[in-house]
Length: 274
Figure 1 (cartoon, rainbow, N blue to C red):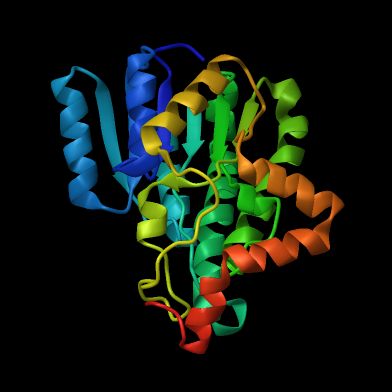
Figure 2 (cartoon, rainbow, N blue to C red; figure 1 turned 120 degrees about the vertical axis):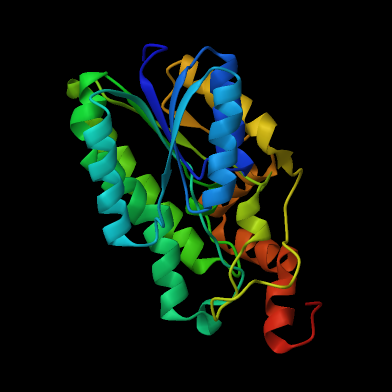
């Protein structure tokens, strides 16, 4: 990817998305198409980049809506002929047991975390091909192993993993690259804005394993992996050990997972903190 090629980042107004933009600017990237659902926050980010003499345009879109994603693709294709990088960062999660989660919540999580990245990659294929560009997908270790209270999120990230691992090989001869990123726990808005089972805001505290990293730390790791031409980026912490434990000793993993995420069951029974 050349430094002047356009970089598209979804969920760019804050959290990991904005941290990735900052890290790319520090590496000399100078043209950005920022995508987010938050109009004011997005416009502020674009103004900030303009003050630093960085080319940036904002595209407001609700990635949970199929028609909004199609319109976004149409706008990007009309505006740019070459896309050096597509960062599918926007994401949404829930904290609720599967039996207490509405179909609408599951569909929304799947739409943002799986369908939107797929539809953007497919819709912008020719522009990525023209620049021999790269697609970066922010997946999760939750796509490799079950996490209590996150069934919909785990399913979406697992689907994202399977799709783009296959997609990578199918477009390799076109010069398009794919970097799959599998973070563990990162301090971003996705957890602060987690949905409850009825679509409201989850009120109980997030359960974590190991250290919670900053968005800036994660962004540096991602951009370094991108520069190195890597195809996958895994965390080197307890969640990676958990993935191996689940693969070889699934019953032991499940017992440990239930112990660690007991709050999900307690909240469901009305005995936990909300």
